[in-house]
Each structure stands twice: as structure tokens, then as C-alpha cells.
Length: 124
Image (cartoon, rainbow, N blue to C red; front, side, top):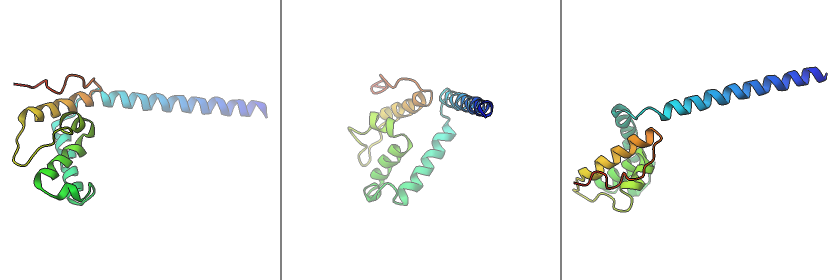
């Protein structure tokens, strides 16, 4: 009886070890590849649908710029907080500098790199 329990525990440990290795490898490989333009467009399209369907609340459907701010937050909450949260886009505003910072943020985030120094890195 003792032998079969020990064998069972060894097998269970081996399974857990293999699964944890596979999981950590998947996470590392995923975080080492930069997000593609196609992935960003797909995520943005999904976010527009979610916002239009009211999943982000009625305040996100109140105007075109409210929709845009909510979509940016949906695509990357971390980058939105860093770049836009303290000063959201306003009606008619086209802020190319912050747009570049936001894209750079998403790029660095996808690689698992530090986001330090992103805000202000595209000041002209």
C-alpha cells in the first residue's frame, strides 16, 4: 500500500512540474513577442463592439470622443492610465504625440519591458 501511494505522489509531482514548466514557457514566449499591428486592430475592433453594446457603461456612449477614450482604455488599461487618464482626449482633439506614446507603451508592455520614461518620450 505504501509503495502505490509513493508512486502516485511521484507521478502527481511530475505532472505538476511538467505543467508548470509548460505554463511558464508559454508565458515567457508570449511576453517576448511584440504586439502586432493586426492584433491591435483586432483588439480595437472588439473594444468598439463592446463599447457600442454598452458593456463599458452609458458614459462611454455619450459622444464620439467618449467612445474613443473608452476604446483606448479597453485596448490597454495600463497604457490608457499612463498616457490619457490624467488628460483624456477632448472633442476634435488629434494628439499625435500621445498616440505614439500609447502605441509605444503597448509595444513595451507586450515585451514585458518597463514602462518608465514612455510618457514624454515623443515630445517634439
